[in-house]
Length: 229
Image 1: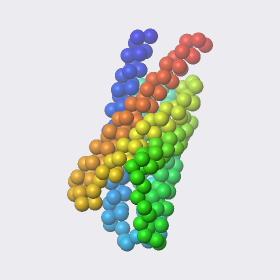
Image 2: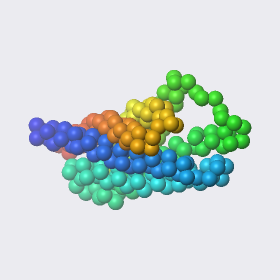
Image 3: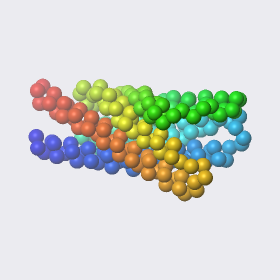
Image 4: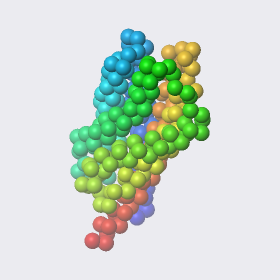
């Protein structure tokens, strides 16, 4: 049992590290691609705003879905030997696609309102924090659901994975909101890029730590179920 515990905590540490660096590249790279698209795009119109949103969702699906999914699978395969990288990366990419599609809706709608009737009022900090947690709950549950579809085939009683992802992203999303709110329009591209990468690195570590604990709990339940059967 001590050997199992040592392996599981080693998996947790690897999970945190893998999630941190992969989100810094996948999520951070997607965000930076969005900055570049906005910077080089023609003057804002409803069509241009919609095209930017579609491009960002596509980039995130490939970049974040692929990199994060592959990094997570490299850790998961040590304990779930029959889980293929195709299963996990595909599930992660589908979750990222749906999450980014929904996540882009508010900003896209606000940008359309700004184009047509001027900039809407800026919500206060408390409202933004509440929105960040709510968005984390919704998007985390969606990502968890798609990953659960691959996970439950290899791990008994894996439905808790959805809950752990929900909690993880509810904790991580406020960091992204806070980081985005601290960026200055006058900052240099290097400063913006470094800030984005650091925020995504921190977010990835926190999210990975939370749902990494969930993974340990699910693994222990799986081992317990296997020993009783």
